Length: 259
Image 1 (cartoon, rainbow, N blue to C red):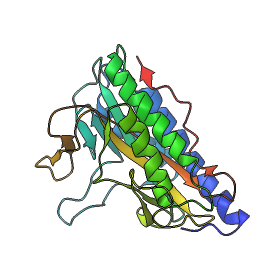
Image 2: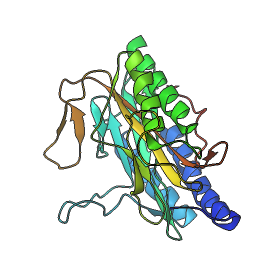
Image 3: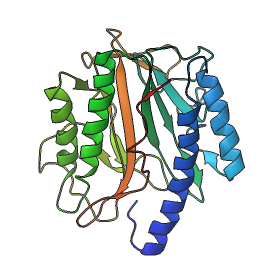
């Protein structure tokens, strides 16, 4: 989606603010002993309270449509984790991905936290992932291309010995969840599509402690690392600006270690 005037921008800001408010309460819910299903149920309750629809429900192939408001991916689960009844434990790396639909405008964003006490390796994985994607959001300005965003992410994490999952990518968003342009977490500077002023983007990456070798569970959704290594993920929504991006989901300063 391309935002072309202040009225559209304000409308999207309001939708994103609701989504961020809900996601913040999900973040505050994370604790040892709490289950992913409890977090997901809270998401449903908060969506109803705010009069919005969780936009993940119903997506996917016919006969295996997604049934939850959130994707909650723990440890070696990289993305699309289905909420279950296994309680969070100390040392877990937890990714909560969430979005809403309000008045035909969609959101999609994700936070990652570790349950204290956390190993130094896992804490580094989360921090580097957060840093890489936050730095990449700053590339969402007119004159840059999608390759500038992807290069920033991949080069930052590779310097620290991590890899990115190349199968899953960032994307435009608006009246549909996955809009143009595609925004991979890898690329070359000044390559790929130009970033148009007003384009609404979801800038994300799944960063892996091991190799980019993934497998899918029999449920048709859950993606995990083949070697069992952990993964971290963050996702932020921004609008491409002339000189600096407009951040729709200001979650940069949220705690990354809880408990």
